Amino acid sequence: MAWVSELSLSGRIDEFRRRAGSDCGPELPRHPEVASWRTATVEDIDAIHAVMVAAERVDHPTWTTPREDVADTFDLAHIDHSRDSVLALDAAGAVIAFGSSFLHPSREGALNVHLSGAVLPSLWRRGIGRAVFGWQYARGLEQLAEAARALPDAPDAEWTAQLRVYAEEHNLGNQRLAESAGLAAERWFATMLRDLAGGAPDVALPEAARESGMRIVTYSHDRDEDTRLARNDAFRDHWGSLPSQPAPWAKFVGGEFFRADLSRLVVGHDGAIAAFCLASVNDDDWASLGASNSYIDLIGVVRAHRRQGLAPAVVAATLQAIADAGLEKAVLDVDTASPTGADALYKGLGFVADERSVALVAHI
Image (cartoon, rainbow, N blue to C red; front, side):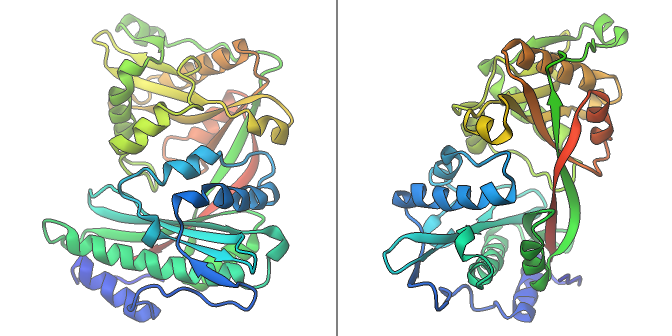
């Protein structure tokens, strides 16, 4: 569903909500197989994670979300689970489904809400997911309306707002559910694997880069903020990317899965970061994938240093570190239509495409 006019952002959102029948905000869903509904508290972290993992083992068996990722959402100031999440409970009080609607904290010309949720696989195709999604959709639109009204300066018609949801390629049910609410498939992403049994690719920094004083160094935590800013610059023109905020970034680089020893930076003669490749390790994914592995979370080159051959070198250096650590594979996700040609870059470094997912979006 799309709505384009010369109205202010608030006006467009209000009109969108009216057309969607969601102008009164979310109401707790009803479903004959759900005994009760409520919002989430910190005591529900394990139950939410259990439902999430059960669904993920069907949707994408090679990886699952760490419990810590769920717990982190209860610590972030921009998320209020008493308003931003809903739980479906059975007669015994056990959580059988959940849904969340998270508004990104960035306020740089766009408002963005990410919807996510899951239902226990044993209860799929009974309409519970549709009930959860209806609540999420209404809450997401309410969040956009509240955020637009709270902006210090009245945004003009160039501001944008959107709802976004991701679905696995084979999960047509989730895709159809989102499409029924007016979201449309907009971008495809691929998970890619790199087998390190034969070693990492041998790719050095180009001679011109070395002569200018650039070098590859191991990540160190005194560069946390510098790397966040480099990440924001590198991803500024990437589809769907929003500026990383200090609090979530601190949780990422300070989390137990992030591996500074495997991550690499390209720095210039003045110490400024020109490129980065950041990796993490979650042992729980090893059994699912059938091999020890590291996940490469972020790869980027700041815009002033693009097309200088830095990306292949920094990725190769990270792959070498992963191989030296005795891990069997490297995993990453890539936007298949990235303007940087990232998917071709990774194929050239020996990555092979595996699973695919799609982003579905409603623009307002």
